[in-house]
Image (tube, rainbow, N blue to C red; front, side, top):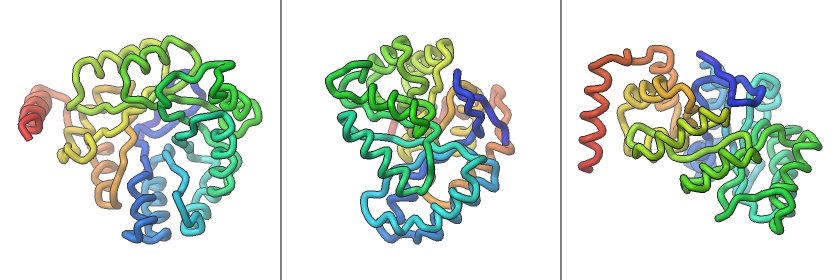
Amino acid sequence: MEYIRLGKTNLVVSRVAVNTENLMNAVQSGAISGAEFADIIKCAYEGGINFFNICLPVNAPFIYADLNALLCEVRSSIRLSFLSKAKTGFELEREVQNALECFQIDSFDLYKIQDPGFIPVPNGEDGLYDALEKLRQSGKILHTGFVSDNLNRIKDIVFSDFYEAVLFPFNFLSEDVYMQCADICMENGLVFLADKPLAAGKIKNIPLAVGFFRRSEHALPLWKIKDKEELQQILYFEKNPPAIDEQFFKDLAEEKERLSLT
């Protein structure tokens, strides 16, 4: 597994990152057990992945006992990211405390705010940004990010110097304007996390998807895996990536055209 430094932060993470949302939903629906969930995360960790995005369970946090035991064991060697949907500073502080208690950890390496329809700034009436700063100063969060599919807002974030990371949908089906936005992030030293690297399941060709991100080295995909088999495929092709040659670009163009017709 290769590792990269995230933007201007001091976080060094694997080139493969895992978004656990689908797995958490599967646990809550009863499709898999908490033990199976923890086993998939352990498999990812043993495969060299050290960056995981987690979210707060909607109910029954006790079902994550197996995951918590694993996090306690490996916490010092992994990086944890969290997505907040808080709308006010009060909600954010309460959410952070609940999340830390739920997962039995002391801090999050990266805490991201879901776009509330505006950019939280210092001294704002919503109090979101000030709450982030308070939590950062207390050591409960180490770095901050912003999540949106609004490209104009993302660009404003890049030049605001208020956040260290951005996350927006990005894959080989993305329009050129998204590609340009990714370049702007790189040029300004922001962490760029790619959401929906498989286009919410539309992309089935994992070798092409992995190859695309190998040539877009400034973008770190958050793979929202659904099971251990998909994880193992991603790990395999990350270790044995396709050659980025004329044939690769031909195959990529053909796949883009095929998917555009579906």
